Length: 404
Ligand SMILES: [Mg+2]
Image 1: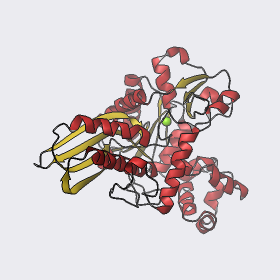
Image 2: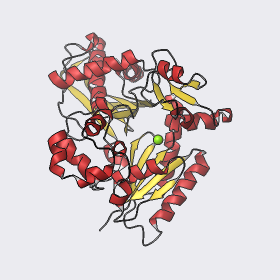
Image 3: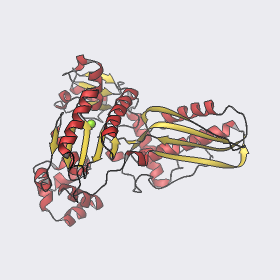
Image 4: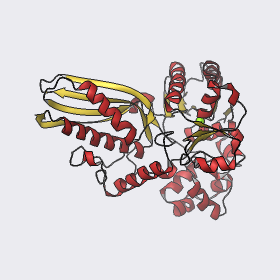
């Protein structure tokens, strides 16, 4: 049976939220991101695109390119809240959906056609979101995730597009190869150097030529260019958390040691998040005392995967939780409410130095193991190391694709 896959994407999400909160920003060029000279552009309005501005660019450069732009320091907490409202609306209307980032969703509408008509159903869902949140959103509807995502991008801004079954290839053919999801700047350059410009040309090539040039990725890109994609919609609830815990051989009351272990655990899980391109919005600490009573405390936070944000919050939770001054048998932490983060690791505090530091640390961990770089306070604390990516078992391809 053919599938019917819907892709929904809020248009210039951070910018739209800022405009919703302050209507004077409507129609003006806007940059959202870190506002210091070393900050990075996290989002930019359509009005700035003509100046050559894109997300991931240093804020300083963006300001030089478009001096009249309004620069706004993003607020991850506010955006997380708006994202939750949209998620709730979708959850109510669609049984099987995936939240693939803070502002992007996939839904499997297969089998709904007989009853509702998928396109009509998707249109109504989109208009409900617009009406209830005031945020512009676009969708693409097709037989798979890749074609739907490309369709959404073609539909933007604030519109919708359906690609009928069997029309995937002709729809993709005239578009630039840059529009294939996973073709980043580097791959684009390689393909351009081969004289490839339109997806049509890739469609006409034999698959093994692409494979010879780009390896395994070449095969995937060739399939995508031909509208072939079988990746399933992964239900939002199924991958909502990652966690780690440790039971002590001998129960302990050494608070410094407990804190050190929590820091090491946080560093390790945050690294797992980054290599899986994930952000967390809910953290929890668990303690089991020697009498086997177990306590957990959790906290909602703005989406992040940055150690320096997570560690103080984990220690805060521990402080609130560990009041019995009794021997501890087990401690653990859990990150949940995970979404894919193709933005920066911590949306708006990021400086280029911070991003480069994380990039460099993660690069060393990817090569030499996840304990090759640790904070001094976490040194010598054993946590359970994992060398695989807990989200897909694939080696990390995270950092090259970080910017959207
Ligand atoms: Mg978006």
